[in-house]
Image (cartoon, rainbow, N blue to C red; front, side):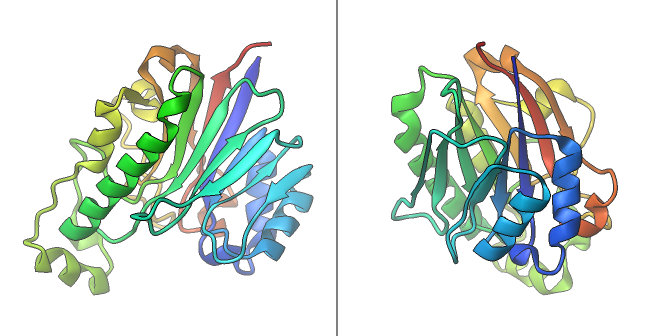
Length: 249
């Protein structure tokens, strides 16, 4: 039995792009969609309706929300003291899998990378009690993976000074922290040579959106791809990432 998951940063609450976002989601035919920058509950409701989803949850001024094909069994927002955004903890219907949604602090600089590491460690501590059950960590981690290159010239001009103010170099440790905790980068596992860039949709040059599964259960990940088909290039500044996960019948 396959569970299809989508993670999607919809940019500033979705704005006037609700129809396009819903079209992207509906074409992917997911069981559950984790949304980031979903700060407008009215838009989340419209997206759920237009995409044919039976359940959704959103809280004003909270970045993380979801839409689901079926009523979920459990949902909770958890905000550790060190985190800018609350994490979201979801148990879909059937309870064969648990999904932890993430939207870590933004801006590519040394101090924000340190903050992301602290946020991530707080999440890992929170979910330690669930490590023996199948679960995934998904979302916008706002950082690059070990070995990936960040071309400073591709950053918006307003952001370049922030990088240089911290020495021009960043120790990219957040994703390594996830890997060291026993998780597998699902996209990189299945596509070792594909850069998998998810941002910006007009000129993709960086990968910020991830799906992680426990190493012992990595074989359950059947698919993990970046969704680039129309209207995704105009629906948001991020491309969504889709994953097919094998769960028990």
